[in-house]
Image (cartoon, rainbow, N blue to C red; front, side, top):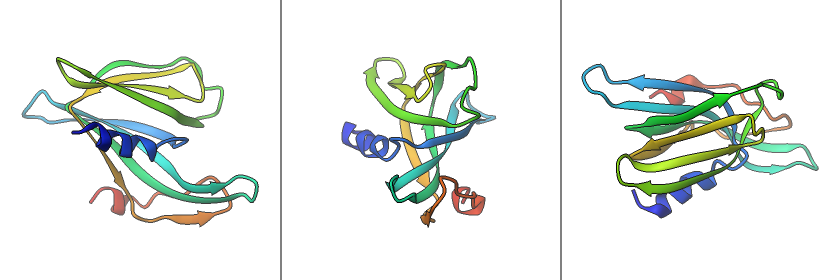
Length: 139
């Protein structure tokens, strides 16, 4: 992947809410995918309480978890991605270092490729929550 492809994906994830993660292993190979389940804020106007929300899966292919730690959940599961830094490494492709709204949460991983699979179902709502339509995400 080229850096501008990473930047395009990462720019969509600023302030994305993280609802959970999955680890997917291929039975026939040592490869693992690390998947973050996120809610993306396409556009928002905090003053008017108007949000455009979409669910998505951020998929890191051929991934290795270097650091995953949640020391305390002071925000009741309300984890937001502030930034994702990445840098090329010789062994595994790229290192991805996440910064969240809570410093007690740490995630650093390496992967050869990332993809963002969005539901395609953007809703304009007055609350910061959107129900998941799993059929659109898991096709």
